Image 1 (cartoon, rainbow, N blue to C red):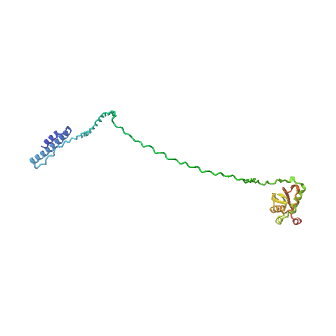
Image 2: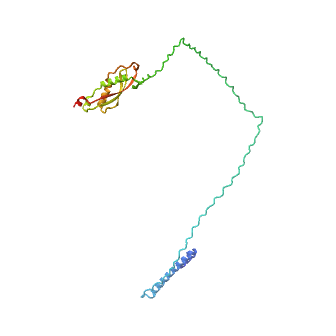
Length: 254
């Protein structure tokens, strides 16, 4: 009965399912037949063990490909509706009848202009000129005093030059500090001379000893100079004299 039901159910399915159901029904029928034979053998031969059931034949069936699912149908959108033509309304000019009353606009007259006030100019008093104007004093620009010209020794008389040299050499004093070193030498001193006054005295050539150089400058500053010649009075004279220093006489005697 089970095999019949299986056949009926298999007949209602598709061909692929029918083949699978047929194999299953045959396998079930073979198993039931084996069981019936075993029961009959036991009933007829109770002392003997029942024969082994016949081997089952199992056939492997390859799985059938699963059909692809149906693709959904794409609905095509309906075409857009056609534009409805718009009928333009023509404006009809309706002539106006002369019986219509025209609107009259009453215009107000403009206001009268305001009188302009003209200011009267204030009379300007004449300024009387002074009877006698004070003269403007003119101040002459101050000019810097010109430096006096310096006269060189070559333009001076030799007698006056000799008298100035003798005055400087006579005022020279040998310094005691140089005596310990037994120093000696000649110092060339340059200075400016004007009417018996000396300025800007400085050493042009040194003796090699600082004490002797200082003594030479001091001799120029404290010397008693002769009178300046009349044609050179008030003028600046440039002098360069030699101041000679020898070793002290006490050292030479020893």
